[in-house]
Structures are given as structure tokens and as C-alpha cells.
Amino acid sequence: MNVVDLIIQLASLLTSITLITLSIKKYFVVPLEKRIKDVNMEQYRTYLIDNMADISKGISKTPIQMARIYEVYDKYIKNGGNSYVHEEWEKLKKIGKI
Image 1: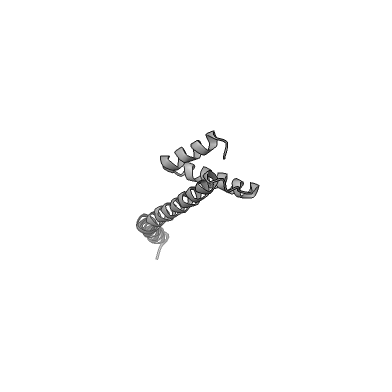
Image 2: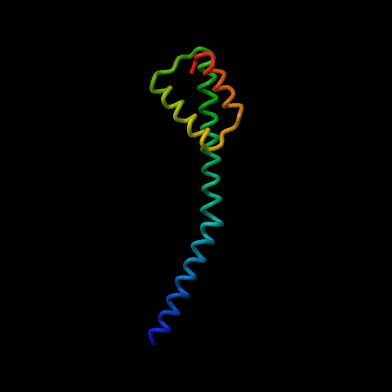
């Protein structure tokens, strides 16, 4: 086998590996990432709604709990969270509960 044939075979191998990798990403990784994001958003939404309901009922939260609530809210909004959670957040913020 000469050097030219070896280079052609290596190029073919690299092309095949690249195509396999791209296919795996397209059909497995990207859908999995979307599903993980959807699950995370659902958990963020539930966490925020539960805590905002507590706060609106006058149930106090510790400073650490409030820090976590703010952290989750920021993640929720940065990932495209919906308006009804934002509206409730703003309502509680306006009356000084958050």
C-alpha cells in the first residue's frame, strides 16, 4: 500500500466517522437535550408556583430559600418561561412580598 492509498483510506474513515457522529447528534443528542430542557422547565415552573403560592399566603421563606427562588426564576426566564409565572412574580414583587 502506498502513501496516497493510505491518505485516501484515512480520509474515507474520517468522513464516515464524521457522518456517524452527526447522525447520532441529530437523532439522539438533540432530542434528548430538548427533553431535558422541557423537564427542567416543568420543574422550575412547579417550584416557582408552589413557592409563590406560599409567599402570597404569608408563609415566610428564609434568606437561603429566597435566594434559591430568585435563582430558579432567573433560569426559568432565561430559558423562555411563560408569562403567567412572570405575571404572578411581578404582582408579588409590586406588593413587596418578593
